[in-house]
Image (cartoon, rainbow, N blue to C red):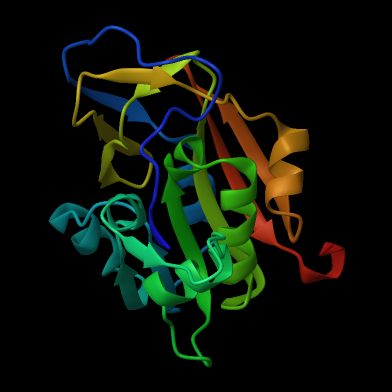
Length: 217
């Protein structure tokens, strides 16, 4: 059976009216909290699951050992999957799209606003896959929308400095948002604990998670 990742709303509402795409500058307390934990002179392996942005690469170069950038959402919506059983096997999809070597270990993962575009089981499958490549205390930065509607696709995030980013909406088409809360996030990523959370004025809550395999499952 041929299957394509559905570009459907995650939530109960259908597509709403369009808005003008815009770029917003904001202070990122989660990024500030993350960078404050980095040790001078140490190099870190980083996974960025958002768009490739040259300015971010330059920022990461100050403390990055190896950088992996993969716009996972774009890969998912353009991915054709053939399943003999007719069932969607998320573990196989993530292993195919994120085929890291067995010895790969990430210290930092930037998921940006990706979780807002995944169902609970899809996010859980992703984080289960990534947990294989995390060290204890690996940091994950994520932005969870608290609005009823979000842009149809993830935004492009650009890091200006250790506490400032811009968020560029790439489409004005809006769709419903799941508005995940911490109990749902705990089910979606059971091997990760919340280190910090910050509520932003623009309708997002920033999270900094830490990989804690002792609490897994």
